[in-house]
Image 1: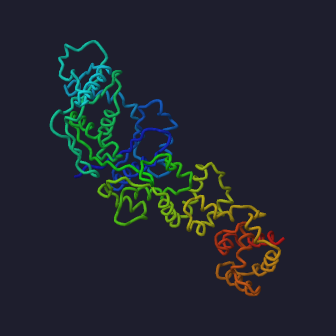
Image 2 (image 1 turned 30 degrees about the vertical axis):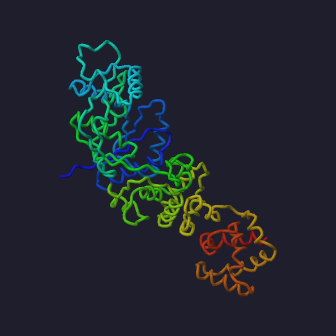
Image 3 (image 1 turned 90 degrees about the vertical axis):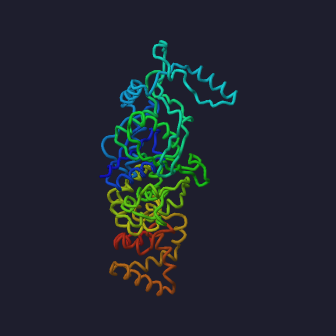
Length: 466
């Protein structure tokens, strides 16, 4: 029976969930969920200055917005420091690690001399094989004994086999002079203790894998399956940074992007399944595999994100969209909708979600149902409500008082009325938009009339004609 899949996302708390980190979390989540496995969350909070409760909460909020649920409790790396040190002391006791008394000055002096002589600056500690009886009563670090011959092969599911000569590996420090464990040790111990089977992370960690494998081998632990994914670049091909715009997942929530569209876009960013661009969460979980991840950096394309988000909004359940819009307004610092506005928006949803790419666009289209009487027309709409147009609206009103309130009947009445005025419906549309929404650009006049209902429609026409 094959081993159950366990993946993890292990961010450092920086105050927000980076969009690259969000994709890493998503890939781990998809891989585990698609195989009925376990997806764990570990916060690598050993940098105490940066690791505030607020910074950790920002990561949790970002994952919650993206809908990436994790199993069990959040694990704090800092709280496991004693366990990390315990492993280092075990390796020390087994002769697989040693105490190194070399000072920083001595190491710097060695490197300067090696550089001047054109030799390797890889530090070889004189204390590696020293007799413990010669140890001074002085501060020391604990170093692992790296293999000095042969090769280490990182069997990576994305990058292929990566071979590193062991004589290029230094005796990595495990415990600092004050006895605290280093990050490289903590990661390995945590992954092992958490039962992680697959380490899916950015390819900026690829070189770390060879050094981390020394710890796995020394402890006799199973090495996880490696999958180092390329980083995300901006549209200019350079590493994603602030100059490219928003970097945090929650910034995209505040910009009004739906979570389903963002999940689809981030999944497709560096991974492919044939030519499929648009897909559901269920399809992503079923299709996602490591062999679909490309080796080259993916480029973040805002237009593609917008297009996918538009497709997801068009197909989404109206009530679910309404709920997500409430969360968007809160994230964007905008006023919440009243109960009446919320009910109106739900009614308008089938008409305003089409061709909207963000919630901001959708709310803008729904302005007609969210605004109060009397409607205040904008500059363009005001021009459509001249004396002649107001007179036409006054004549139109009686024709709408008894008509059956469905699209076919409304279209027939308005077209007949336009013909009686020796004009086309298109000429009526401008004044109607201005009267119903106070704007020149709106959803279809018929859509607005159906959503508003007879009474509200007639009241707005009377207001505009006055």
